[in-house]
Image (cartoon, rainbow, N blue to C red):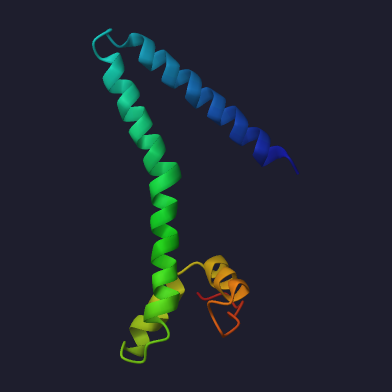
Length: 106
């Protein structure tokens, strides 16, 4: 049951130790650049990309899917790309009138 969690933690520790080993091999003049690049990657992965994903899903559910001006095939494709959990969140917040379907699209 906890196997995947343990494997994830072990792999994260191995990756972190490899990262530290690589950073020690840099010259002193390159260390600040490494730190800035690491901080930039961290901010992109944990702050910007989730925000863009949420914004993308909200735009799909609020603007594109309810509009009849967009072709049905495009709406279906965008509904397939959108995240169902955001759809349920919008429904729970009252920003969507229709309950999202829970069927899995293939």
